Image (cartoon, rainbow over all chains, first blue to last red; front, side, top):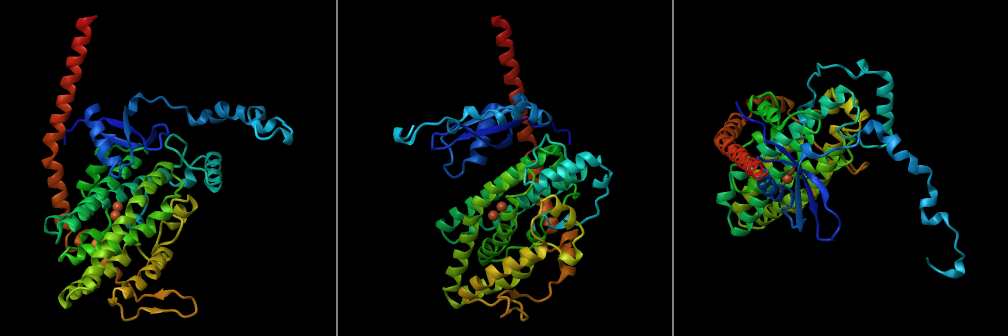
Length: 95
Length: 334
Ligand SMILES: [Fe+2]
Ligand SMILES: [Fe+2]
């Protein structure tokens, strides 16, 4: 078996609801056009999608799980970023 | 189940040889129902178990296309043909979702496929039985997909994120598989005497192999403790098998069919259906490669892979050429 490895692509799908593209999974394909075709066949067999993106997996830069606390924990104490931190009298109504 | 051969001896580095601090933090995350993601630290044994389980599951989906694919061109109506074709396509899709999940653990697609073709990887014993009549397509959808669903629903909560997410997608698609199978069984059961006999014959042949899909009895299951502790598996083989029997027996009686098990009876106290003794020697034989269709399944799979080689090579060569041409144009423009 002298085969070259088939490149890996990450697949993102936007469904009807208009929400952002969401990661659906991955496919192997030699180029972007065929990756799109494969993504359509593998991840949208039931009208799940109105738009598909494919991105070479190697092009994604991800945060290191070891940095999780350093990156994301600081927001844990910033309660003033949430509406419930501020007091508005009930008579004023919904705000 | 689709991963029923997991109780083979694991010869790699045992979990007990890992850094105790890391191991404790890992277990604490699992106990807190956190998902483990591809780049997170994990014990080697966890990784090995998952690669083996997920790839075995993927191989089963792919090999599982063969027994049903056998009837696509001979489906009795266009409605049945469209349904069966869609189901078999889904199974191919399931295989691909699962291969992708296994690859996140650091094993390439090519390696996984090679392991299958070299006979080093297992797939579910159920797909080594032949589909002799159209009624078998009904029995497979009803029983085999029914058993698969029982096993796959708890896997949606598996501790490994990519596997759990693939299983959620799979489970959403499975219920159509089971319903199309049951509908076929219902049509045959309500048809002529000959059609009813076909349905009964299919049930007779598929019932026991379906029960074997859940794997060895808990008494003989070596791997369960680690996989349970790591929340890869949430219910034991026997528990899942019991759930399946309880759900399926009334469905069979509704069809007016009889199960090929004289010992089958409902326990009045517990409400559970008790089945007779499973022939484990048959299970072991089929899993070891000596079922009715093992050789044929591997031959077909190998031929499909080899016949596709030139297509993969041509597509890669074409992509390379286009990339080179695009690069040359860019250089010329600069
Ligand atoms: Fe499936
Ligand atoms: Fe299925």
